[in-house]
Structures are given as C-alpha cells and as structure tokens.
Length: 313
Image (cartoon, rainbow, N blue to C red; front, side):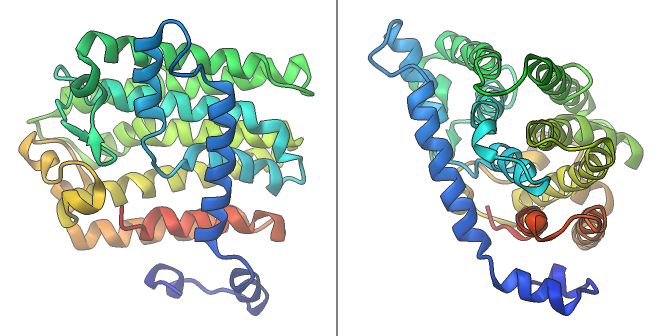
C-alpha cells in the first residue's frame, strides 16, 4: 500500500476489497477495451481523406493512460449500470482529450516535439494537418455520443451538455487560455487552482458524470461523484506538475522541465515540491471521502484516485 493510502484511516473491509482488485490489471483491461472500440469507431487510415485519418490515428493510438474513458466506464459501474452502454461516450472523451494534446503541442502553444514517446502530430504530419486532425477528433466525439446505442435521447442530450461544458470555455479550453495568459506572471493560489480546475479537472468531471448518467445515477450520486472528480482532477494535475520537475523524458515520453522554462504557473513553483505532494495527498483523501456512500462497485474509482496521485508517468 502506497504512502498516500497509509495516510488514510481505512476499514478492514476496505483493505480486503483493495486486495481483491489489481488496479494495474483493471486499467489495462479497460484500456484494451477502449482501444478495440476506437479501432472500430474511428475512420481507418485507408479511409478518405487518408492523410487526415493517418494523422488522427497517429495521435489517438500513441498509447496513454485512457484515464478519462476508464473513469466513464468505472462511474457507470459504480452506480450499478451497464458500462458497455457508455463505450461510445468513453471513446468520445478520449477523442476530445487527444485533440487537446495535438493542439497543445503546436508551435503556437507549447511547441513540443514528443508526445507519448513519438513525434507530435505536427512534427509527423505538418502543422496544418495537425490542426485539422484535432478539429476532426473534436467533431467525431459528438457524432459518437449522438450515435450511442440503447440510451434515451434525453440522456444523450444531457451527456452532450456535460461534455460540451467540460471541454469548452468554462472547462478545458478556458483553462488553457488562462494557463497561457499566466505564463511569466505571478499568480495567487486560488487562481492557479482555477486554471487547473478548468484545464484538467473539468473534462475529468464530465467523464465521470457522463458515465454515471448512462449508468442511471440519482442526483445525490451525481453530486458525490462530481466532488470526487473535482478532487481527482486537481490531484492529477498536481502529480503532472511534480513529474515535470522530478521525472525524465524517457519515462514520461515527453519533455520535462518545460514548465519552468516557460515560466508556467504550477503547484511546485508556487508552493514547493513537498507542499505539492502534501496537497495531492489531501485531495486524494477528500476524493475517497466523497465516495463513502458507495459500495464495493466504486472500488475501481477509489483505486484510480490513488493511481492518479502515485503514478510515475
């Protein structure tokens, strides 16, 4: 059991549950399921227009944790739903996440050469094609949600609203512009938290809420899962900030030390490494507390919260 879980008061029953599930295996199984679905649902490299679809697949199948789609499936399961009904939405969320990475890597943004251990999309296919590949992924995402099977039209509309908000101006995109505008400036802690609540946390919350809606969650369950998602989202970003300082390009598959070079607002730069790790641990504890009303079906969500903080890449 990790340092982070050792800080928590965990019941004997919960310890038994933890022992019964290997989170690495769970994540790998779900990621494989998502990859199979993506291969079926996303246009092949041979489909017209070929160069665009090659660029899309270059980034989409470069690997990665598949955290957002896994959270979608796990949230559907946590409320007693059938996670297979959420597969289109799960793939859609990975499409949106990947589009954001393609655009983040562009010369006008972070100007990165590597992503997940391979050349970034614009390095492999050119800047214009990379922009269009990101646009294509964002558009495909909403088509996938609209084409979901065995889900009511009412739920589909609700999910589209959730995902649009999480990805838009009061979500991921809004966080990105705040992040860019804050480079080279001194920011207060509350503003840093706002940046990352939007940039990282909002799409994570949307992933969780969408899965829960598909699974049939009631309002109390949605509120609890939203609280969990907000805390996990911030903890995940803090872990990213720490890894950008402490890890290596070989482990992460992308450049490290770039946050400091660009004078980005990060948790380590604002409060220090030790304090950042303590804050991540506190957020983990809060995320687990948000799930106290859930039974063993929410165990994957509990372990994903720990993974989000303790991961090495």
